[in-house]
Length: 370
Image (cartoon, rainbow, N blue to C red; front, side):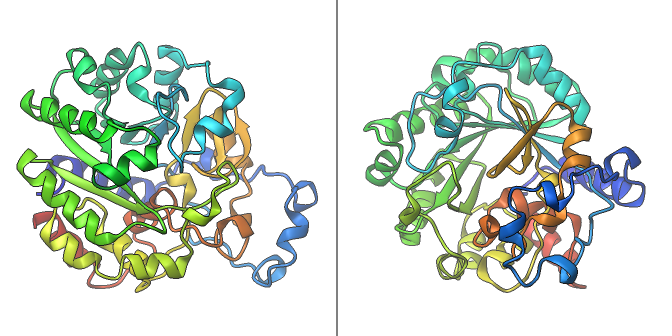
Protein backbone atom coordinates (compact mmCIF):
# COMPACT_ATOMS: atom_id res chain seq x y z
CA UNK A 1 0.00 0.00 0.00
CA UNK A 2 1.21 3.51 -0.81
CA UNK A 3 -0.11 4.90 2.48
CA UNK A 4 -0.78 2.95 5.71
CA UNK A 5 -4.42 1.98 6.09
CA UNK A 6 -4.49 3.48 9.58
CA UNK A 7 -3.40 6.85 8.17
CA UNK A 8 -6.07 6.69 5.48
CA UNK A 9 -8.69 5.92 8.10
CA UNK A 10 -7.52 8.78 10.34
CA UNK A 11 -7.54 11.29 7.51
CA UNK A 12 -10.90 10.14 6.12
CA UNK A 13 -12.53 10.33 9.55
CA UNK A 14 -11.06 13.77 10.19
CA UNK A 15 -12.23 15.11 6.81
CA UNK A 16 -15.73 13.66 7.19
CA UNK A 17 -16.19 15.13 10.69
CA UNK A 18 -15.00 18.57 9.63
CA UNK A 19 -17.06 18.66 6.44
CA UNK A 20 -20.19 17.76 8.41
CA UNK A 21 -19.47 20.04 11.35
CA UNK A 22 -16.68 22.55 10.63
CA UNK A 23 -15.46 24.54 13.59
CA UNK A 24 -17.48 27.80 13.59
CA UNK A 25 -14.62 29.95 14.92
CA UNK A 26 -12.72 29.23 11.68
CA UNK A 27 -15.57 30.27 9.38
CA UNK A 28 -15.95 33.92 10.45
CA UNK A 29 -14.99 36.60 7.94
CA UNK A 30 -12.97 39.30 9.67
CA UNK A 31 -10.82 40.16 6.66
CA UNK A 32 -10.22 43.74 5.63
CA UNK A 33 -12.23 45.25 2.79
CA UNK A 34 -10.90 45.32 -0.76
CA UNK A 35 -10.27 49.04 -0.29
CA UNK A 36 -7.50 48.16 2.19
CA UNK A 37 -6.10 45.39 0.01
CA UNK A 38 -2.81 46.40 -1.66
CA UNK A 39 -3.75 44.25 -4.69
CA UNK A 40 -7.21 45.82 -5.16
CA UNK A 41 -6.24 47.66 -8.37
CA UNK A 42 -4.73 44.52 -9.84
CA UNK A 43 -7.88 42.58 -8.95
CA UNK A 44 -10.09 44.96 -10.90
CA UNK A 45 -8.12 44.14 -14.05
CA UNK A 46 -9.24 40.52 -13.94
CA UNK A 47 -12.76 39.91 -15.37
CA UNK A 48 -13.59 37.08 -12.97
CA UNK A 49 -13.08 39.36 -9.99
CA UNK A 50 -15.49 41.79 -8.42
CA UNK A 51 -19.22 41.38 -8.89
CA UNK A 52 -18.75 38.31 -11.09
CA UNK A 53 -16.43 36.53 -8.68
CA UNK A 54 -17.76 33.14 -7.58
CA UNK A 55 -17.30 32.26 -3.96
CA UNK A 56 -15.08 29.28 -3.17
CA UNK A 57 -17.17 26.08 -2.75
CA UNK A 58 -15.67 25.51 0.71
CA UNK A 59 -15.36 29.12 1.84
CA UNK A 60 -17.65 28.44 4.83
CA UNK A 61 -16.24 25.01 5.64
CA UNK A 62 -12.59 25.80 6.13
CA UNK A 63 -10.34 23.44 8.06
CA UNK A 64 -6.66 22.44 7.84
CA UNK A 65 -5.42 19.12 6.53
CA UNK A 66 -1.62 19.34 6.72
CA UNK A 67 0.28 21.83 8.87
CA UNK A 68 3.55 23.11 7.43
CA UNK A 69 5.79 23.71 10.45
CA UNK A 70 9.02 25.67 9.88
CA UNK A 71 10.97 25.70 13.17
CA UNK A 72 13.73 27.69 11.48
CA UNK A 73 14.75 28.98 8.06
CA UNK A 74 18.48 28.44 8.37
CA UNK A 75 19.86 26.00 5.82
CA UNK A 76 23.20 24.59 4.76
CA UNK A 77 22.25 24.97 1.07
CA UNK A 78 21.16 27.80 -1.23
CA UNK A 79 18.90 25.92 -3.64
CA UNK A 80 18.02 27.82 -6.81
CA UNK A 81 14.26 27.45 -6.45
CA UNK A 82 14.00 28.06 -2.68
CA UNK A 83 12.41 31.28 -1.50
CA UNK A 84 12.76 30.80 2.25
CA UNK A 85 16.41 31.77 2.59
CA UNK A 86 15.66 34.89 0.54
CA UNK A 87 12.27 35.93 1.89
CA UNK A 88 13.30 35.46 5.53
CA UNK A 89 16.88 36.69 5.18
CA UNK A 90 16.41 39.18 8.03
CA UNK A 91 15.27 36.46 10.45
CA UNK A 92 17.43 33.60 9.17
CA UNK A 93 19.11 33.19 12.57
CA UNK A 94 15.83 33.02 14.48
CA UNK A 95 14.08 29.81 15.43
CA UNK A 96 10.92 28.77 17.20
CA UNK A 97 11.10 27.32 20.69
CA UNK A 98 9.91 23.78 21.25
CA UNK A 99 6.96 25.19 23.20
CA UNK A 100 5.98 27.51 20.34
CA UNK A 101 6.06 24.64 17.85
CA UNK A 102 3.87 22.39 19.96
CA UNK A 103 1.42 25.18 20.81
CA UNK A 104 0.98 25.81 17.08
CA UNK A 105 0.45 22.09 16.38
CA UNK A 106 -2.25 21.99 19.06
CA UNK A 107 -3.84 25.24 17.91
CA UNK A 108 -4.13 24.08 14.32
CA UNK A 109 -5.16 20.50 15.03
CA UNK A 110 -4.35 19.14 11.54
CA UNK A 111 -3.81 15.36 11.53
CA UNK A 112 -0.55 15.62 9.55
CA UNK A 113 2.46 17.84 10.21
CA UNK A 114 5.11 18.51 7.59
CA UNK A 115 8.26 19.68 9.38
CA UNK A 116 10.20 21.77 6.90
CA UNK A 117 12.28 24.93 6.80
CA UNK A 118 15.12 25.75 6.09
CA UNK A 119 16.74 22.47 7.01
CA UNK A 120 14.84 21.02 10.00
CA UNK A 121 17.69 18.69 10.97
CA UNK A 122 19.60 21.85 11.97
CA UNK A 123 16.95 22.47 14.64
CA UNK A 124 18.55 21.44 17.97
CA UNK A 125 15.36 19.99 19.47
CA UNK A 126 14.20 18.19 16.33
CA UNK A 127 14.16 14.79 18.04
CA UNK A 128 12.12 16.08 20.98
CA UNK A 129 9.78 17.96 18.66
CA UNK A 130 9.12 14.92 16.50
CA UNK A 131 8.53 12.65 19.50
CA UNK A 132 6.09 15.13 21.07
CA UNK A 133 4.09 15.49 17.85
CA UNK A 134 3.90 11.71 17.44
CA UNK A 135 2.68 11.42 21.03
CA UNK A 136 -0.22 13.65 20.01
CA UNK A 137 -1.28 11.06 17.45
CA UNK A 138 -0.17 13.07 14.41
CA UNK A 139 1.46 11.86 11.21
CA UNK A 140 4.79 13.50 10.35
CA UNK A 141 6.72 14.07 7.17
CA UNK A 142 10.14 15.47 8.00
CA UNK A 143 11.41 17.26 4.89
CA UNK A 144 15.20 17.29 4.58
CA UNK A 145 17.99 17.65 2.05
CA UNK A 146 19.41 14.47 3.57
CA UNK A 147 22.88 15.75 4.40
CA UNK A 148 22.47 15.47 8.18
CA UNK A 149 20.46 12.26 8.32
CA UNK A 150 23.31 9.98 9.36
CA UNK A 151 24.40 12.42 12.06
CA UNK A 152 20.91 12.98 13.48
CA UNK A 153 19.32 9.52 13.18
CA UNK A 154 20.23 8.82 16.81
CA UNK A 155 17.71 11.51 17.82
CA UNK A 156 14.79 9.53 16.36
CA UNK A 157 13.10 6.17 16.80
CA UNK A 158 11.33 4.41 13.95
CA UNK A 159 7.59 5.01 14.20
CA UNK A 160 4.68 4.20 11.84
CA UNK A 161 3.74 7.87 11.83
CA UNK A 162 7.18 9.24 10.90
CA UNK A 163 8.50 9.62 7.36
CA UNK A 164 11.81 11.16 6.30
CA UNK A 165 11.07 13.04 3.07
CA UNK A 166 14.35 13.58 1.20
CA UNK A 167 14.58 16.22 -1.51
CA UNK A 168 15.97 14.91 -4.83
CA UNK A 169 15.46 16.87 -8.03
CA UNK A 170 17.14 14.44 -10.41
CA UNK A 171 20.24 12.32 -10.78
CA UNK A 172 23.57 13.40 -9.32
CA UNK A 173 24.69 16.04 -11.82
CA UNK A 174 21.39 17.89 -12.10
CA UNK A 175 20.45 17.58 -8.45
CA UNK A 176 23.78 19.01 -7.32
CA UNK A 177 23.37 21.80 -9.87
CA UNK A 178 19.91 22.69 -8.53
CA UNK A 179 21.15 22.86 -4.92
CA UNK A 180 24.31 24.70 -6.00
CA UNK A 181 26.79 22.34 -4.34
CA UNK A 182 28.62 19.21 -5.47
CA UNK A 183 28.36 16.05 -3.42
CA UNK A 184 24.87 16.66 -2.03
CA UNK A 185 23.28 13.86 -4.04
CA UNK A 186 25.76 11.29 -2.75
CA UNK A 187 25.28 12.41 0.86
CA UNK A 188 21.49 12.29 0.50
CA UNK A 189 21.67 8.75 -0.90
CA UNK A 190 23.90 7.65 1.99
CA UNK A 191 21.38 9.22 4.37
CA UNK A 192 18.54 7.29 2.74
CA UNK A 193 20.49 4.04 3.00
CA UNK A 194 21.23 4.67 6.69
CA UNK A 195 17.61 5.54 7.49
CA UNK A 196 16.26 2.45 5.73
CA UNK A 197 18.84 0.23 7.45
CA UNK A 198 17.72 1.65 10.80
CA UNK A 199 14.07 0.83 10.10
CA UNK A 200 12.73 4.26 9.14
CA UNK A 201 10.21 4.98 6.41
CA UNK A 202 11.61 7.20 3.63
CA UNK A 203 9.99 9.18 0.82
CA UNK A 204 11.64 11.36 -1.79
CA UNK A 205 10.36 14.77 -2.84
CA UNK A 206 11.00 16.05 -6.36
CA UNK A 207 10.32 19.47 -7.84
CA UNK A 208 9.89 19.59 -11.61
CA UNK A 209 11.36 22.68 -13.31
CA UNK A 210 11.15 23.92 -16.88
CA UNK A 211 14.42 22.19 -17.81
CA UNK A 212 13.58 18.95 -15.99
CA UNK A 213 13.62 15.89 -18.24
CA UNK A 214 10.90 13.54 -17.00
CA UNK A 215 12.94 10.63 -18.36
CA UNK A 216 15.57 11.52 -15.79
CA UNK A 217 12.97 11.40 -13.01
CA UNK A 218 12.06 7.90 -14.21
CA UNK A 219 15.77 7.05 -14.10
CA UNK A 220 15.98 8.46 -10.56
CA UNK A 221 13.11 6.31 -9.35
CA UNK A 222 14.68 3.21 -10.93
CA UNK A 223 17.96 4.08 -9.21
CA UNK A 224 16.16 4.31 -5.85
CA UNK A 225 14.29 0.99 -6.18
CA UNK A 226 17.11 -1.17 -4.71
CA UNK A 227 17.16 1.17 -1.70
CA UNK A 228 13.49 0.27 -1.08
CA UNK A 229 12.35 3.88 -0.82
CA UNK A 230 8.74 3.80 0.35
CA UNK A 231 7.22 6.54 -1.81
CA UNK A 232 7.81 9.52 -4.08
CA UNK A 233 6.21 12.97 -3.94
CA UNK A 234 6.42 15.08 -7.07
CA UNK A 235 5.13 18.56 -7.91
CA UNK A 236 5.73 21.35 -10.46
CA UNK A 237 7.91 24.35 -9.68
CA UNK A 238 6.02 27.61 -9.46
CA UNK A 239 7.62 31.05 -9.45
CA UNK A 240 6.74 33.52 -6.71
CA UNK A 241 7.94 36.86 -5.43
CA UNK A 242 10.76 35.60 -3.19
CA UNK A 243 12.53 33.88 -6.10
CA UNK A 244 13.72 35.89 -9.08
CA UNK A 245 14.82 33.13 -11.49
CA UNK A 246 11.53 33.18 -13.41
CA UNK A 247 12.96 31.31 -16.40
CA UNK A 248 13.22 28.07 -14.38
CA UNK A 249 9.51 27.91 -13.47
CA UNK A 250 6.54 26.38 -15.26
CA UNK A 251 3.35 27.83 -16.73
CA UNK A 252 0.17 25.77 -16.57
CA UNK A 253 0.66 24.65 -20.15
CA UNK A 254 4.21 23.60 -19.27
CA UNK A 255 2.87 21.57 -16.32
CA UNK A 256 0.32 19.78 -18.50
CA UNK A 257 3.05 18.84 -20.96
CA UNK A 258 5.51 17.70 -18.28
CA UNK A 259 2.95 15.55 -16.48
CA UNK A 260 1.07 14.14 -19.48
CA UNK A 261 2.48 10.64 -18.83
CA UNK A 262 2.31 10.75 -15.04
CA UNK A 263 -0.10 7.79 -15.01
CA UNK A 264 2.61 5.53 -16.45
CA UNK A 265 5.01 6.71 -13.74
CA UNK A 266 2.38 6.16 -11.03
CA UNK A 267 1.78 2.58 -12.19
CA UNK A 268 5.49 1.80 -12.19
CA UNK A 269 6.58 3.57 -8.99
CA UNK A 270 5.01 4.33 -5.58
CA UNK A 271 3.97 7.93 -6.19
CA UNK A 272 2.17 9.35 -3.17
CA UNK A 273 0.36 12.22 -4.89
CA UNK A 274 -3.33 11.37 -5.20
CA UNK A 275 -4.72 10.37 -8.62
CA UNK A 276 -7.13 13.32 -8.46
CA UNK A 277 -4.28 15.80 -8.05
CA UNK A 278 -2.37 14.06 -10.86
CA UNK A 279 -5.41 14.50 -13.15
CA UNK A 280 -5.23 18.19 -12.34
CA UNK A 281 -1.55 18.29 -13.28
CA UNK A 282 -2.34 16.64 -16.63
CA UNK A 283 -5.09 19.16 -17.32
CA UNK A 284 -7.88 16.57 -17.15
CA UNK A 285 -9.64 18.20 -14.19
CA UNK A 286 -10.13 21.62 -12.62
CA UNK A 287 -9.55 22.15 -8.92
CA UNK A 288 -9.88 25.37 -6.92
CA UNK A 289 -7.07 26.32 -4.55
CA UNK A 290 -7.65 25.52 -0.87
CA UNK A 291 -4.57 27.13 0.61
CA UNK A 292 -6.03 27.01 4.12
CA UNK A 293 -5.76 23.22 3.88
CA UNK A 294 -1.96 23.47 4.27
CA UNK A 295 -1.30 26.39 6.64
CA UNK A 296 2.28 27.42 7.41
CA UNK A 297 3.68 28.43 10.82
CA UNK A 298 7.16 29.91 11.23
CA UNK A 299 9.17 32.43 13.25
CA UNK A 300 6.95 35.28 12.04
CA UNK A 301 3.67 33.52 12.88
CA UNK A 302 0.95 32.01 10.69
CA UNK A 303 1.87 32.84 7.08
CA UNK A 304 -0.99 34.10 4.95
CA UNK A 305 -2.43 33.36 2.55
CA UNK A 306 -0.33 30.33 1.65
CA UNK A 307 2.99 28.52 1.69
CA UNK A 308 4.26 30.55 -1.27
CA UNK A 309 2.64 34.00 -1.09
CA UNK A 310 3.11 36.21 1.96
CA UNK A 311 0.72 39.12 2.42
CA UNK A 312 0.58 38.88 6.23
CA UNK A 313 1.73 36.97 9.28
CA UNK A 314 -0.89 36.27 11.94
CA UNK A 315 -0.41 35.72 15.67
CA UNK A 316 -3.09 33.02 15.89
CA UNK A 317 -4.42 30.31 13.62
CA UNK A 318 -7.93 31.69 13.99
CA UNK A 319 -6.71 35.05 12.71
CA UNK A 320 -5.19 33.34 9.66
CA UNK A 321 -8.48 31.58 8.95
CA UNK A 322 -10.77 34.55 9.54
CA UNK A 323 -8.73 37.60 8.56
CA UNK A 324 -7.44 36.29 5.23
CA UNK A 325 -9.65 37.40 2.28
CA UNK A 326 -9.64 33.93 0.76
CA UNK A 327 -11.91 34.80 -2.17
CA UNK A 328 -9.31 37.31 -3.36
CA UNK A 329 -6.84 34.52 -4.16
CA UNK A 330 -6.63 31.67 -6.63
CA UNK A 331 -6.53 31.51 -10.42
CA UNK A 332 -8.54 34.33 -11.96
CA UNK A 333 -8.48 36.43 -8.79
CA UNK A 334 -4.88 37.29 -8.00
CA UNK A 335 -2.32 37.42 -10.85
CA UNK A 336 0.29 35.83 -8.59
CA UNK A 337 -1.84 32.67 -8.55
CA UNK A 338 -2.31 32.46 -12.31
CA UNK A 339 0.21 29.70 -13.03
CA UNK A 340 0.27 27.92 -9.66
CA UNK A 341 -0.49 24.19 -9.59
CA UNK A 342 1.60 23.36 -6.52
CA UNK A 343 0.38 20.60 -4.22
CA UNK A 344 0.16 22.88 -1.14
CA UNK A 345 -2.87 24.61 -2.68
CA UNK A 346 -4.46 21.89 -4.77
CA UNK A 347 -3.81 18.51 -3.12
CA UNK A 348 -6.16 19.50 -0.25
CA UNK A 349 -8.90 20.20 -2.83
CA UNK A 350 -8.50 16.63 -4.09
CA UNK A 351 -8.68 15.30 -0.53
CA UNK A 352 -11.76 17.40 0.28
CA UNK A 353 -13.55 15.94 -2.75
CA UNK A 354 -14.16 19.28 -4.50
CA UNK A 355 -15.49 18.82 -8.06
CA UNK A 356 -15.71 15.11 -7.31
CA UNK A 357 -16.80 12.49 -9.82
CA UNK A 358 -18.64 9.22 -9.24
CA UNK A 359 -15.51 7.25 -10.13
CA UNK A 360 -13.23 9.07 -7.68
CA UNK A 361 -13.59 6.66 -4.72
CA UNK A 362 -12.67 3.75 -6.98
CA UNK A 363 -9.66 5.63 -8.36
CA UNK A 364 -8.49 6.44 -4.85
CA UNK A 365 -8.95 2.86 -3.68
CA UNK A 366 -7.13 1.43 -6.69
CA UNK A 367 -4.28 3.90 -6.19
CA UNK A 368 -4.06 3.08 -2.50
CA UNK A 369 -3.90 -0.66 -3.02
CA UNK A 370 -1.52 -0.59 -6.01
